[in-house]
View (cartoon, rainbow, N blue to C red):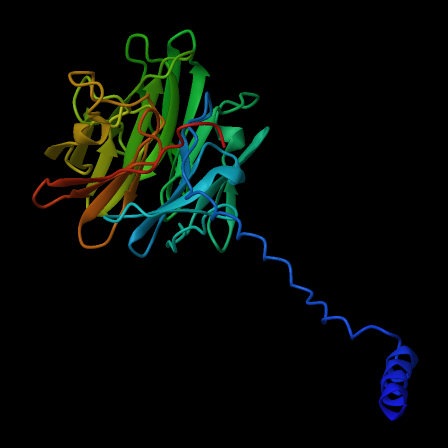
Amino acid sequence: MAPMRRVLFAIGLVAACGGKPPSAPVVVRAPEPAPAPPPPPPPCIAVPDEDAAITHATVTGASVAYCVGASPERCFSLALGTAALAKLPGLPLPAEAVASTAHVELTNPELKVCTPSACKTLTPKIMPGTTPLHAATNDAGTFAAVLLGDAEAGRGYAEVWDVAAGKRTAVIKYARGDYKCGDVVFLGDTLLITARTCAGPAARGALYTLKGKKLANVGNADFGLYGDAYVHVGGPLWAFLEENGHRIAVQDVAKGKVTKTIDTSALWQREDTPGADAMGSPGESALVALADGQLAVVAGSPANGSVAAVDLASGAVTVTRAPLCTAAP
């Protein structure tokens, strides 16, 4: 009977412990990590249907910064050579520049020429009761130019004034055929008067002395200046970008002589449209000065945001293409 008791005892022990062997441990697996989101697409320039003029163009190191149109939402920086495009959070910071020592304050009906020390009012002398359309002064504030008359009828004219003496030194009739509506600026002590068609994107420019003598047309008789893209090169030399962006004229504004003309049509050449007119939309491109005697043309439509670096000494043109969006962002 002893063996039987041992068997019963063993059965009793199993029953006391629950009757079943312990279960295997449950393994809880961590969830698979979510896949990383794809990187954002590289920035590109969406070609706008309108408002495509290049604005706020400036140079930042080896890059050119600008906005496509007036919106701060469409501002970019393009690295020359590498074509690396970066979207800017707002308007580009302007390049440091030497401010003019004098300026014009034109508040209807007053016209004042102001220097850091004082302002002189010319209104009573310039046809009292007539509102000047445009006015400018040279850096010293010693001379002022005012556009008056019925421009749209082709009877617009500029008056040049010796500010200190309060004396008119010249009257300039600036209309040229269909180019009637004007603007005026000083390039040093030379007057640049731009006459444009009053309702269309076309303009011509001419240079005058303070005594009203015409020195020369800007570029040549057919050189378009709509958009007013020009920069100081040095001394009496200024560079003017033709309104369609396909050439630059370097001109001595003191003598009126064009010293060099540079073809920039490479900026507009496209492989998909060989033989097409190599020029841009009038007045949309910008011109800025780079370091070491170079200029940069920033293209409006249809090459929006691309840049042509121009070496003034050799005339060499190097184009950096901005990436354009293939679809609306």
